Amino acid sequence: ASFLLLASRVRADEKRLLDAFERRGMRYEYLDSRTAWSPLHQDARERRLVLNREIGHARALYAARALEAAGHVVVNSAAATDVCGDKWQTSVALRAAGLPTPRTALGLTPEAALEALEAIGYPAVVKPLVGSWGRLVTPVPDRRTAETVMEYIAALPSPQSHIVYAQEMIAKPDRDIRAIVVGGELLGTVHRRGEQWRTNVARGATTEAFEPSADIVKLALAAAEAVGADIAGVDLIEDADGRPLVLEVNDGVEFSGFQRAVGDRVDVADRIAEFLMTRAQS
Ligand code: ADP
Ligand code: ZN
Ligand code: MG
Image (tube, rainbow, N blue to C red; front, side):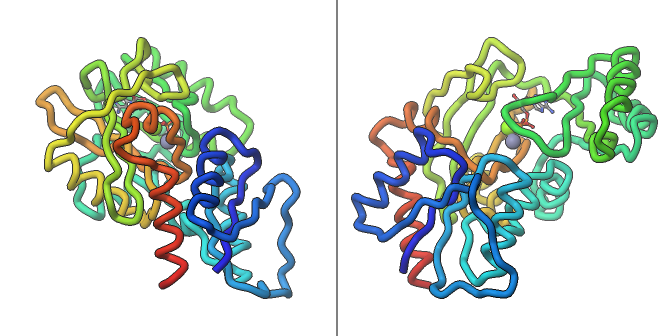
């Protein structure tokens, strides 16, 4: 089999992945998504296993769709990328699988979202349907603030931005949890701790490995399965009673912070390479 790594830029994580491919003697090519295009009336000469590392959600999704249409196998699949890239679809999948997740509502307009927020109660959180690194994830302490936030949302140009994802604010400790799952196996869990309320590594949160409870292991594996992601970064938070809830599942997993925290206990890039080799044989 031959492998393809699709990415718009070779960052530190992609470099680690390519090194892992080489160490395992995998035959691979790097495809730069900034110059990639796909013909419709032509199937692939050779079926390939594609690792999709494109960071832009829309481009990652269409890349997966086009490559699958040409007969390739893409990890994560287009279907999983579709669900993970959209917070509402992710929430629906988590609920369908019976997994604990914060109380959430979808407002079809900013006005409707105000009503939804009344029902959820304050403090609440409003998030863009598509987004990452905590961008625009907004704490909404009270109705007065919500009214203004909705005015801002209504002024955004894209129709999709007017669909509002609203969620109860969980009184979490000063940290949350990131779990990485590859091929149905948990590679490990880290606590993310930050000065800020949004504990994304991209916002400067620090990571520290910890031994997960059986509950957290089960939840992380079930969350990855619920969205159909072979490679998943599962975000979990604990509520005031210490009960873990699944917040979201990320399909394009950045693992530098995680790798630093787990040290030489796990090699994430190598486990991904190993998983791709197994998939290529099936
Ligand atoms: P993103 O895809 O941008 O990472 P998240 O839903 O993971 O979006 O939110 C970013 C961060 O904001 C989370 O890691 C968490 O620290 C905080 N956060 C998000 N939703 C909630 C919530 N309902 N209650 C408390 N904190 C939250
Ligand atoms: Zn995310
Ligand atoms: Mg997140």
